[in-house]
Length: 271
Image 1 (cartoon, rainbow, N blue to C red):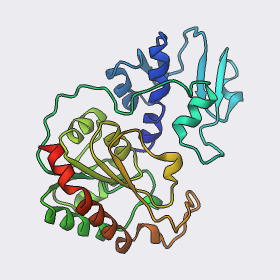
Image 2 (image 1 turned 120 degrees about the horizontal axis):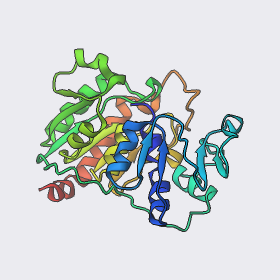
Image 3 (image 1 turned 90 degrees about the vertical axis):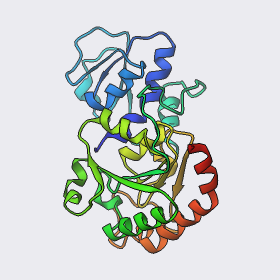
Image 4 (image 1 turned 180 degrees about the vertical axis):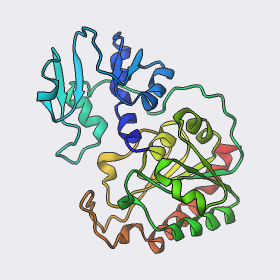
């Protein structure tokens, strides 16, 4: 689900302007931003260029010439040149850095938790960010030993894994995915849009970062924990072939140590 995480990281902009009394139209991925509409932080979502006359527009793009016909447009380069959380980078460019926003998406999906269900997402928008499949097989064994049941969630980017994994659900609809994630007591995934969504929905989320930089691209949320080999500098998109930062020999002990330290607290909060 490439682009989902990037979309979610713009939701604070929508929320802040909505709280200031603006009626907001989003021109973007209609499925991803349907979550914003359902949460009440935008009025309309369109895949086509809006024809309305807006008092101003915020455009996340390097290509100013393409959008030169937009009046009163504020342009923001979507890729920061500094090591700063992308949400704060956006808000600084808009002079909104002092404004408050929700760390958890306020959306009512009316889904009940399944006690001690751990959802695992084994993919991302780039294979450069993915460990080998044998890591996930070993991870599943570890999670089950800690008393959790496991369920993989797959999207179009992981379709080939449906021939290998047994206990999975396949999703193309973002709302169905969100409802399933809400059933989880714990989530484990990579730097992916699904991980961003899990964290933003308030699910305790363990997120593994390999070549990407979590200081810039970490998700919204209040219950996420990042696992990353700090001895290995971020190198995405020019990622190395070794991917030692995503080796199971590094990740499995890190996740086990995290669970051993936090599992009692996690289980109490989920019952």
